[in-house]
Length: 128
Image (cartoon, rainbow, N blue to C red):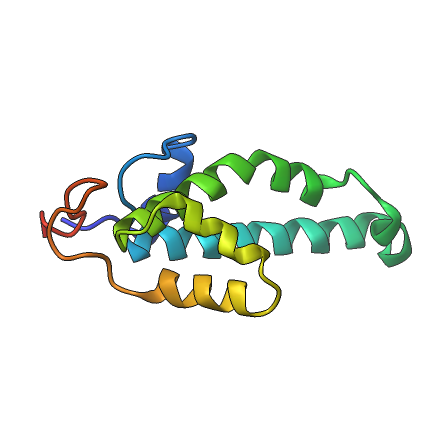
């Protein structure tokens, strides 16, 4: 049976620093939605508590601390997502190319993973 959206959102946190293996699109995109929603709530809460000007000047507000906390799982799930389309994690560095790099990475994140096993592990969809 498939996982609930909440389970998909926290799956990369359970695999905190697992850089091997493959991540389905569901795992990646639900986690990205989770990060976006939590960041939005934290920023809005900070603005409500200290005001917009103070929030813009704050360097270590709750949003910054959250970003630091999820940095490693975010990189790990990105690496596993690249592995799912049979690309080395080194391809993540394409994001450093202005404008085109992030677009290419976005397109890759939207692609279906390799059908069947690849050099990074078994197909995560094989059991379904």
